[in-house]
Image (tube, rainbow, N blue to C red; front, side):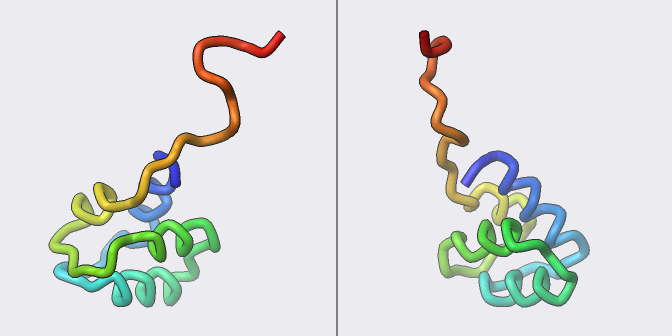
Length: 75
């Protein structure tokens, strides 16, 4: 996942009541019509209860975005 996934999760969960389980968060987002990438980010969360949106975004798995090599361009 990427930083954008944190933003997707935040947007999909606007207005949700906490505490909430992973499954409750996914159900809430589905009912609000969240897109596939937002739902993918939420499904990657650990199976636990969350007390706040900050806890959710901190738990979204992080991976580097793209295939670029660090430190410059290919020649």
